[in-house]
Image (cartoon, rainbow, N blue to C red; front, side, top):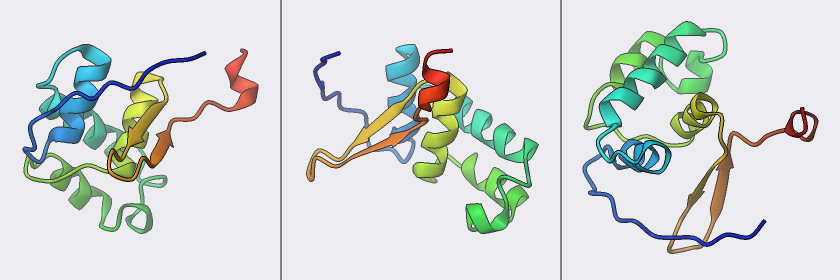
Length: 112
């Protein structure tokens, strides 16, 4: 399957990752508060998986931290959002052309 990459500019407001995902998945550039809630709920629901060692801070501290609109998202948040939407998310660095994939589907599950 072939496709094209289209660049859409999202305001750099510290919630740009969340708003970009919301725009692509739901055609809504103002999803950051809702998606931050999804991430906090996911992390809080599985403290064994989302441990201090994984998050870099205690689970409950991370949950409060990610709800702050001034905090940036990254790999952990993209991974959770890929699972939430049931889609693979490709994050491109337009300066280096590096692509990081989140939520990759395993071959076994791809055809089920």
